[in-house]
Length: 155
Image (cartoon, rainbow, N blue to C red):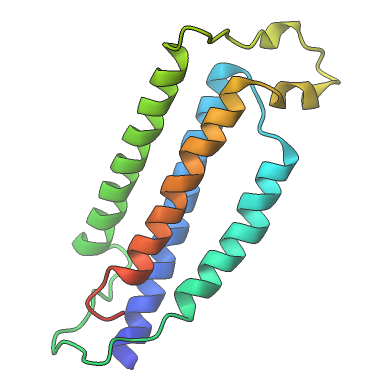
């Protein structure tokens, strides 16, 4: 069970690193388009999803038959960093593809962020961009949680 516990800790660590990295990509996209995600999206991601995903990852049972080798134990080892970077690259490519599809759609009209008043910041959340940004971020985020929680030789 010690190996499974170590694998669980490293998987949770990698998931939270992906969360921070991918959320920074999301914020950069919001700044680029001049939009803000609505408060309910932040509540869904930060409160409900992170709590539920982390709890689900830590409650995954170990496999019935464990391999004789040990899981990676280094937070900055090549296996840990490589898996985080590869997942981040796949997530970012999916995210960029969805944003490109959005901008090249015939009905797409760029959000006129310069016409909104600074005091009315909530108006920046009602547009195509925030819907596509949230949708394109949330699914890969959950997929990375599942990949790190289930896709291991120890879990």
